[in-house]
View 1 (cartoon, rainbow, N blue to C red):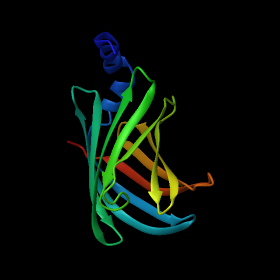
View 2: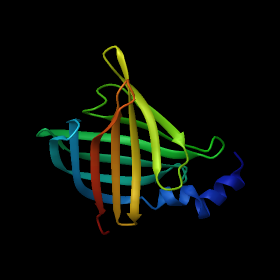
View 3: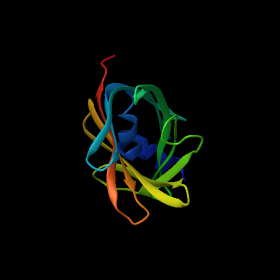
View 4: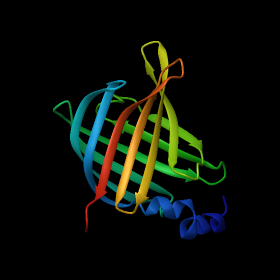
Amino acid sequence: MSKETFENSIQAGIHLKLLRLAGNWQGTSRTWFEEGVLADESPMRGTIKSVLGGRFILHEYEGTMMGKPFEGIAIYGYHIDSGKFQSAWVDSFHMGTGIMSAQADRNKEYFSVLGSYSAGEEEWGWRTEFEWANQNELVITAYNISPGGIESKAVETRYSRIPS
């Protein structure tokens, strides 16, 4: 990667779009363990900040899940050379002691990454997408993908920016 390419991206490209997510956020997180059956709806607070000179954003969040404290950390970025979004994610509920790595080709409509996790003997997919309608509203949605390829909504966090 040349410095000039990154500089262009941070001034007018995808890295600038990621940097615009920086700030303090609050909202509601909804979780489904089976399709169509809401298992939990809880308040969620998050902070997104730029790290490593704008190369990545770090999302730290906390709330409750099933009445118990819940927190997580994700780092997101765009790899210019491969043309892929990438992430690494950990949390105190879904991931246990694992780290999920994910990536996906660039989509012009929204940021999306696809990873996987083991559930016993089976490998499941996990797709996370960010949709931001404007600079003050952000929706982060994650989908479970069964070993047979059936996708269903697992978590939806609707954030509003907290004014500074």
